[in-house]
Image 1 (cartoon, rainbow, N blue to C red):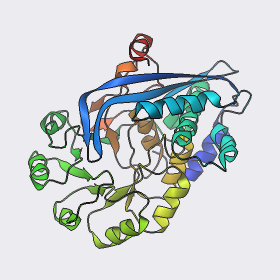
Image 2: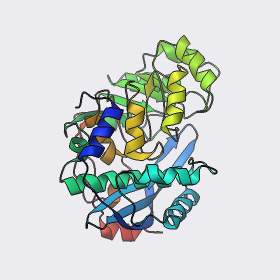
Image 3: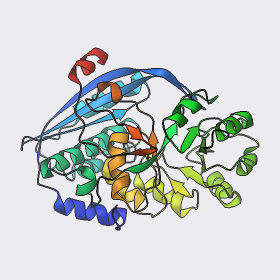
Image 4: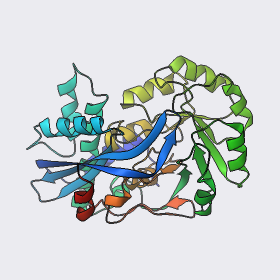
Length: 345
């Protein structure tokens, strides 16, 4: 683990990164079944639509990643946005930052945010491959195991026993039901509760539940509500998976609207955006994308928890494996092409 801030790590990594130039981009759409479905406080996910990105360089290195879009419509939009971008000949290391000014008038949240974040993730994968280093090492850290928690797919905690048996010391449930909380805590694990931005009228009672954190208790844009609750509750408040930029993170941190941060690497601007958020120094966890997230947490000094909820495993040659509540940063993403063909849309 590095001792520098996220901004320091980013600047140093860019200095170390090899010079690469974009040649072309290949984007494919797949839709994986959610087995079992993922129940959230905002609705149930029955499929995982993913945009697969292959960033091909003039130097012969290809960077790979994927972006989870939640809906088929979102998938179609992200694929279309990526295919519309003219990026040939651009430097890989600054690809996302170089493109952002083009979208000043439309903004870079939503579908375009996913497109640019995905490009940045693929760019850093290409840079690490070209440097013949794990991404964690290129970013100034080392590929060491990082703490992980098991994210439950059932709001009733039906999979809590199975996930605890996998060795996770902490689990997260998307329910505020006192019976569900008590049932899971009886397993002897630490517990996080995620409200998915769906407020409840008696939220204060969660402060007595002995939770690791209370996640997204209000709509992401309601900084005033977050700031009031963060000041009033002893339980740490977690926010960040819905931020679309490091600027949104800065506004939240400066408003005292969270104790912890959990940027979604694809939404927040890829590896570049994630490191800029981590530079605030708050305990930093990750949202999804364990293949990349493990490297990010291994690189920063304020890494907290990796969320383990495997979405892309069926199309990867080497899916992420958790062991004894940790995840080891692995090699770069390689597609299982037969599976990609089977799930393509």
